[in-house]
Amino acid sequence: QVQLVESGGGLVQPGGSLRLSCAASGTIFSINAMDWYRQAPGKERELVAGITSGGNINYADSVKGRFTISRDNAHNTVYLQMNSLKPEDTAVYYCHVEVRNLIRVYHYWGQGTQVTVSS
Image (cartoon, rainbow, N blue to C red; front, side, top):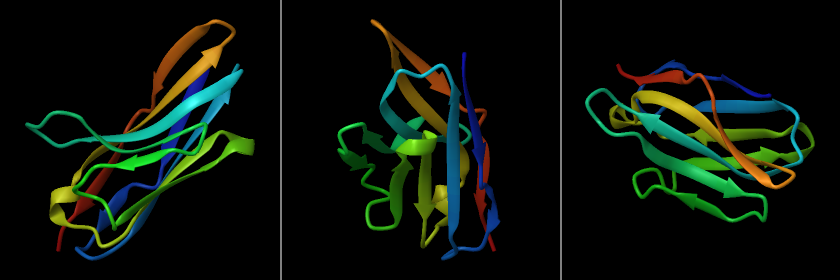
């Protein structure tokens, strides 16, 4: 009932920037948190950045100082501004949203968007 649409991935050179976006639509009473995860081949999926409805933000140590997560509550959208990109940032990035409808909590995942950092 909730759909997540991701965009913004692509190929960039080291040191470049990208901005990912994820828009949630559907039946949403409230959003508890919106997060960005990534997964590189042969590695586990890891949390990159997250933001709660109360504004609490956390980042993976590997992206602190380079990535910024933000949200547009009016449009149920979360963004990930990625600066000073490194080859190690290459991965599929997934949006995750925790939604609360009435008494139930649901987790939704975006389709993933490829980010490749290479010369």
